[in-house]
Amino acid sequence: MHHRHILSLLFIAFIPIIVRSQAIDNTLSYKNINSDKYFRLNYENDFFSSTDKYYTQGIHLELVAPWVKQFPISKLLFHPHFSYIRYGIGLEHEGYTPSSISDPHILYGDRPFAGCFFLKTFLIAIDPQKKQRFSTSLNTGVIGQAAGGMEMQTAIHRWLGDITPHGWPNQVHNDAILNYQVDYEKQLLSLGHILSIDADAMARAGTLSDKINAGTTIMFGYFDSPFTTTVATAKNFRIYGYEHAAVNAVAYDATLEGGLFDKTSPYTISPKNITPFVFENRFGFVVVYRRIYLEYFQSLLSNEFTTVNYHVWGGVQIAFGL
Image (cartoon, rainbow, N blue to C red; front, side, top):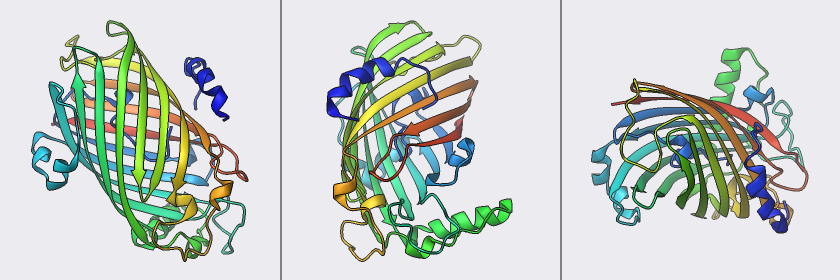
């Protein structure tokens, strides 16, 4: 997407199409759970869109609890001194493949094989008076063979009786993941518990991904406001939908270009072929009953480099209050 079209994004975000960023991110307002103690499982896969390519799978296990504040890495998380702050940790695994996983040869012009595995430490700060949110996250882990992408995809396909992937020996080589991310959200409009519109911005830097983005979110239905610390009590039942759209300015992506330190990967995408502006969109439905949170969503990402197309995938989340 050309930069002069960024203003058009504010209009596009209001169109409820089934079209989010590659890495799983549960800190934004549309993923909000109004509790400082919960466990969440997020699973994303492109079989929800009948494909098996590009961003092919993501798994995230997350725990939010007050004691995480004492976790040593949590001391590195910058935050404004808002009145309410929750802390969490998570384990995340991501897999990326070209458009064909059965061919053992390098598919030039296609996406490289890449696996990522990392620990995510994060916080979410909320200012209910000014209706704003601020989140910080730090990812530490590995990209490459040590992430186990080949083993995980092979095991899943064997279990499903699907084709065996053969191209993983050509994957991006081992390298370190150390990434820092900051998000800010500001509520623009609210109609009680039935409608919320907010704007958001993000900056991410490190060895895995460098980019900034700006977007907007609409939540509609019946929900607890993600910009307050008080929880509605109407029979403990919520049901709502959300639409989030954003545009990314991308400077670097190790899953495409290889790791920052190891330059021996058998195949990567040249920086000159990386698309500098990438559009993402996510649309989902959520049901909350008492302490149980269920979600289904679908996401769309425009082409990340010049010789591939856009990609669509889906996912589910389940969370339990503790």
